[in-house]
Image (cartoon, rainbow, N blue to C red; front, side):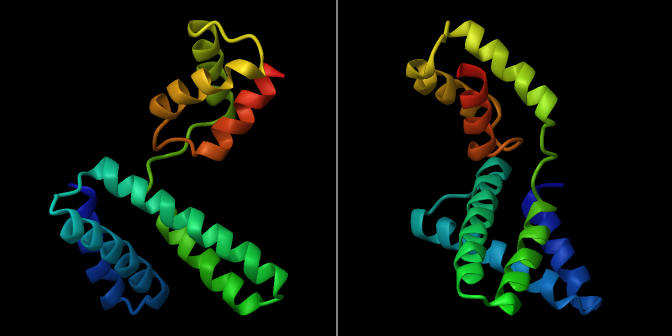
Length: 147
């Protein structure tokens, strides 16, 4: 079952069960997908949809930071609920231990020795861990291992 089909099925289930937050979150994902497909006249595959979902999570995390500064607890919870539902459609995230092992392999492959080599490492790591680790986690691990 593709991710699109899964979203469609889960949307129906959420509507039947009157799960408003889940319904609205799935509709948001579907809207992001449809907008790209219509604008660019392409059919998105699962990997592209995962990238869109990750982008949506990042946007909501940034909104939470702004709402926290404005002391808007009601809006913070709404955004966090959406993030929780978005994460249901991401592949399982890699553990920190496995991420560190993979990063050490990449560092050895590109012969990185200092922070000056961070660009080479990040490029390879972003490709290798696409979907299973976000850029922030990868960046932090690279800094930890190269410093």
